[in-house]
Every structure is written in structure tokens, then in C-alpha cells.
Image (cartoon, rainbow, N blue to C red; front, side):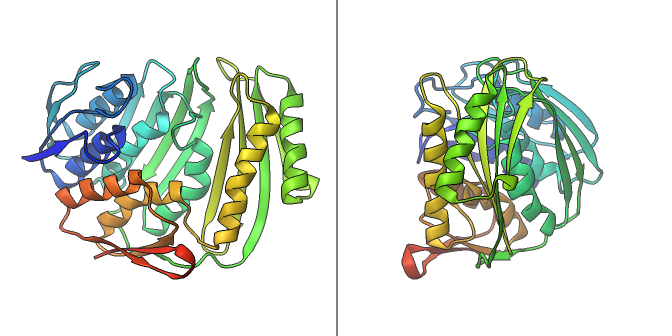
Length: 338
């Protein structure tokens, strides 16, 4: 039994999600206490409880403590099984974070899977579906599996009501990948999405993009949604290079102007382009676990976030692997899995 303290490091939900994913992949039981201890509302919220229940269903696990508000659970996995699964969060909680929990096991399962998850599709503190499909999953597919994510209905905070459908064609073992160079920038584009709001918001966001990134208008797109349960606004900037695609996302909020949303998102893009690094911080967070599962591989990034460092410590409790970082030029880091 592996024992985990959920208050360690950044003390958030990622510790729980990584532990669940790794427990399924390695067939090792674990107990975690102090779940999300460093958050304003500690313990299991609906999103986290859905992740626990989804993991349990995928591997027929025995679980104790799986209830709203719980600060500790014990999880004993059995054999992972692919197939058709459907999970509903019951709030605007992130569908992508629930997927993040079960995907590592399903992409190495004995049979293909189709997963439907209902909840939020675009959440400010979670990777968007656009980020997964354009940035994260293409790298996963280099490792062997085929994973396709489709938004069947958009869901924004606080209404939720979104739905994604995920098709997974697994492999027995993941192939290591190396991403040490970004290569030339091949294209840059931006999409401003609005649901239940004036398209003028999207237009103003893209006007900032034109000025700050000097993009041609043909590379800009306004997307007006009719399928969302509640209102929402999201700005997505895609930077495609030879070896990786990065997606930077800004979210509209009440009291925050379209111009501020766009300027803050562009600032992230400028920083990324200036650094010359292939893997930015959010993508580095997402890649830690699948890279570790290969038993090898490497990527270069900027300074690791506390989120990534905490994730690495959980990974090393389950896998016989060391995650090493080495300083490179210009303040960059090489992350190697050995």
C-alpha cells in the first residue's frame, strides 16, 4: 500500500488524479489523506469525486471514502478494462481533468474505449479541450495510441452542461519521445469563441491579436456557439512549430474586458516565443505522467512549476523511474525520465 499526503507540494487535486492514474496503470493500491488540503474548499468536490468513481469503474477497484467533502480515500485497483463509459460530473467541473485521470490506463488497456464525460469543457483552471486535441494528444499519438476528442456540447462556468466524447485506440506499451527543440514556427492563428454573448466581444479580442501579434486577418476566426447551456467566452491562440504545437487560452469573466483577456493571452505567447523553448509550462504538467510511463524520453521547458514538481514526486512513488532536470542555456531546463 502506497501512502500519500495530499497536502504536500502544491496540495491540489492533481495529486489525487495522478495517484489514481498511476494506481490503475501499475495495479498498486494507495491511500491518500489531506486531499486538496491547500485549497479554499479542501476535500473531494464533484469533479474529484467523479474522477475517483470513473477510475474505480475502469479498473473495478475497491474504494473507501469516496464521498463529497472526503479528505481521505483508499483505492485498490483490479484489472483495467476498455469499453464504453459515461460519466457526469453534475457541475461545471472540468471534463478534461476527469479524462486526464483515466486516459493513461485506457490508452494502454487491452481493448479500445469510448468515453463520454459531461460537465465543463472550458474551465479557467484546467486544460481546455482545444489544448488537449491540438497540443497534448498529438504528442501522445507519437507514443503509439490513437485518441480523438470531440466536443458534443460546450459547457462554461458556472452553468456547465457540456459533453465530450473520446475514442481511444490503445497500445500495449508507450514509445518514448524526445522534444528538445521547437524548430521553425510554421503558423500562428487565433479563435475567439462566444456563447450567449455579443460577437463584438470576440471581435475586440481579435483586434488586439492583430495589433500585438501582427497576424493576417485570414488567420483569425470568430466562433459563435448555439449549443452551450450558459454564456461563455474563450480566446485560443495556436502556435504550430516543427516539433510541437502550443495552445494559449484566455477566459472571459464578468468585469474583465475583452481587451484585458486578449492582452494577457498575448503576453503568454510573447514570453513563449522569446524563450525559444518547445514545451511551455502547462504542457509540461500534462506530459510528466505519460513520459514517465514510457520509462524514458525527454523534453525541454522553462522552469518547472510547483504543480509539475509535486506531480513528479507522486510519479516516483509508483514507478521505478527518476525524473531528472538539467539546466540548459537561457534559463531553460531539460527534463529526462530514466
